[in-house]
Amino acid sequence: MDHPQQTKIRSMIELLHRRLQEANEKGKAALEVEYKSVRDGVGVYIEGAKTSKGNTSQLFGVNGAEALRLFRYVCYEGFVRASSQSDLSNSYGLVAVETVSRFGLLEIGELPDPKEYLLSGF
Image (cartoon, rainbow, N blue to C red):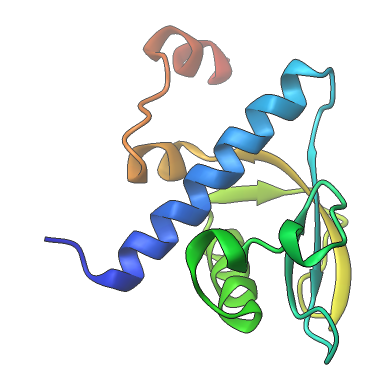
């Protein structure tokens, strides 16, 4: 049985993984994620959606501050890899999520293709 917080973490990873796949299918190399920790619009907005409906907190049933904390957590803990220019310490920013790490894929039960993993090591 999973702890409720672990379920939320997995949900964030799964959401980023799905949206990153969609972005890749459209020819984009990364997924743009905007975050805000300021009074109006606190939360995480994927692919530049700036309405309250674009706030991931709506998807998880949490407030914007918790959605932001979950996003920062999955980035800091290495579940997803953001571009080297990404800085999550500001109160507002735009982050380019480049990939879901092998660790992240294992967490959500999406094991990477063994051949692809082997080739990435070369």
